Image (cartoon, rainbow, N blue to C red):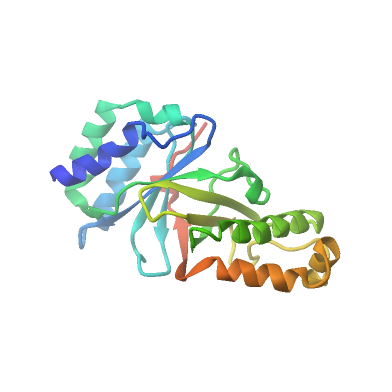
Amino acid sequence: MKKLLILLLVPLFAMSQTNPNREYWQTNKWTAKKGMNAEFESGVAKKTQKFNNTKETSFATYQIITGADQGKYMRVMGNRSAAAFDTEDRAEMAYWMKNVMPYTEKNDGNVRWWRMKGAGQNWNNDMPPARFIKMTTYNLKRDKSSDFFRFWRNNVKLQKALGYSGVSGVFMLETGGQAYQVMEVEGYNSHAEGKGAFKNPDVNYIEEYNKMFGWRSHRNDQAAFNAAIEQWGITIETAELKPEMSSKLK
């Protein structure tokens, strides 16, 4: 219980690594006790409604639906400044300990990210949370990040030029996980409709890439991009929003 309390308190204090000019997001995956999912969900929903009903205090809750963590609940605290981690709400903490922790098996610990604003597509913090998200996490080699981001930024530039409609945010790990970790989050509301499309569905993407960045650049840039990722270094998960456990902003 003491260990869980310490983990829960972490987001309420500033870390030395934070940068006052960055936009921070924090995730934490929770496991309900066996047979107590309903109680856990109810406790989180009531706590969220009571304490997290403004933009500055909001949370979104997703349930992982693919991957090794399938079934876990992921609480997302988004679009915060570094100063937000300097505050503590003891009443909120006490409520969580009384009404949620009795139905909790474990949590995986807080993971803090900062959003790389120029690396995403069509991301808007004022939009409501997407029904589904796909999370692709890359573990980069220490000395190869420039190769990774060159290809990434080129793709962002080209996709914008081609009118790509998909929504994605790109996040760099700040603390709580392995170093040199990058996560892309793609939001969408229907598996049937997909995550996005180009203005011209028949576009030859590789040809357009080479037109914009030079002959054979796609092949060479993609090879360098792939070589920048650790062999074990890609994890892909999907999750579905739990609206009743998420903030309802007015």
